[in-house]
Length: 124
Image (cartoon, rainbow, N blue to C red; front, top):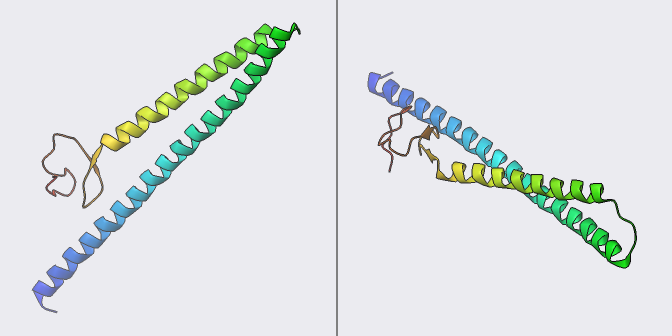
């Protein structure tokens, strides 16, 4: 086989390997993003349930029924914790959004990089 053809085939193989790796990494990031979004959705639903329960407790207090203040405090603290977790998820999503990745190999790059540190591709 001609040496140039071999060289061309080798380059094609390397490019295909890099593209497959980039696709796998992109898929992995998408899965993580989806997991975070679903967790935030679940947390918001849990907060809504706790808010309804707190509303019932407040109404019962209004009607003169006895209520457990410790239980109310625990629910309020649970809501605070869930809001903190949602804030962390949003921070992770923002960090992921602002991360620069190489269009060829999919590896993360620094915002100040002009070229990919892995494959050498020029970055925007």
